[in-house]
Image 1 (tube, rainbow over the protein chains, first blue to last red):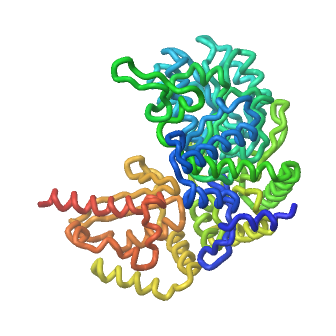
Image 2 (cartoon, rainbow over the protein chains, first blue to last red):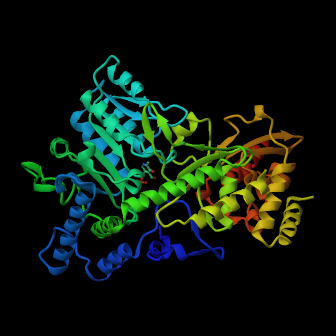
Image 3 (cartoon, each protein chain N blue to C red):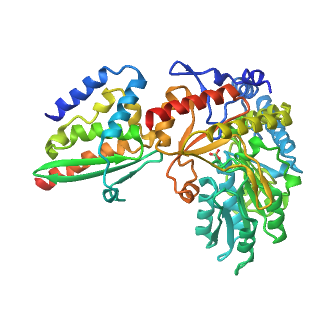
Length: 415
Length: 140
Ligand SMILES: Cc1ncc(COP(=O)(O)O)c(C=O)c1O
């Protein structure tokens, strides 16, 4: 794939750090933005800023129209059946908190069960713990095996065990530690067989996989704009209309109401505004719309092939480093193919991730080190910190090679 | 040597290291040579948890002087720790309370003390001071 044409569209990649060219390999944390997105943000801030849904003047009409257009772009991007199913939030974390609160208040009673996996980002753990505390429900954990794969038999065991059938299963599309694509179709089929709705943390998934919420038959899908080459502070909660329709709102305020009366009480707005209290991040959302359009203009097949090439090469090169374990190896587990995206979390004998990351930083390379917001999974592996390099569509094979060289140099200093 | 003299010695030592690479190499060397804490001193009580790396600090009062020993699972952090131990260990609580706690910044490692680093170092410095303050008031 010709990455130079793509790279040109990302001005941030030209940044110099300590006088050296930036090699940005922390895309799992956040991605850089293409000009198309930056231009929308600038244009709206400079000349089209008017609050949405609130006025009849030109600016408000313009920004309201763009807000709606972005919703339509995103509906189209994930093939939702209606715009009522696209709720804008501040990010994956916002989406999951909204879901945990509203789903919990609407459907969960004391003694009910909700299931998550051991591979979650803290964002898909803590909101559920809070919800359980509020409602008296129990949080059950679907454990992973050493490979990071999920054994469907273990899930069925949870579903079959005594007590009521769980009210919800929430799991990641792709764990931000493992980079493996979970077999959602199979898992959702099993869950639905038991009558359990499924929520997916798609923060990493939406970036690497074409998502069709109808084909997947997923009940909720949460993602962030900033990892998808869009603006920070934007996010989406997709939810099937039948659930969203029934669910009570999370936050109250302007925009989410139909009528407010101090005497008669308040009635709520129709979907999706019922879940969007207060002035929306409409400029960010317009930027997210542009990011999604940017993604749709790319050749998805070429892109997936390119990512597969980077992944294969990186895994192979990393396997030559003595004492290096890369968590989440692709392969067939429990009859399902687990593909890997170009995200590599590793532990290296005799070198602490934070030391490696600091040395790489001085060579111009941005990687992540630490607990990766997934303390339970690290604990499962007996680790207190990992080093993570995560690639995006604009990273090159040369950057991978440079990273490998730099890594070896750092290890030489440390071991 | 007084704390101040030790600090000046370290600052002098670092003034010869211009390049970041030399600086890090020196810190790594210091980290490798600092004696590790015995496993039984790496207790929860002594642990300063950071997201990036973990730091253990053990303190005891001997003949009116505070003796620090410390460790980290990350080498660069451990190198900085060894400087802190060298400078502050073996002094009276009074001397430590009165000492300048910012010399690490003067050797160009300021960013390592940023709370956002989450490497436990900032908490370690605060902890050293705390031990000194507590020992000082107990004595008084
Ligand atoms: C798998 C996963 N879930 C949730 C999140 C949280 O996303 P955000 O911080 O954008 O809300 C992240 C990213 O940090 C992630 O990788």
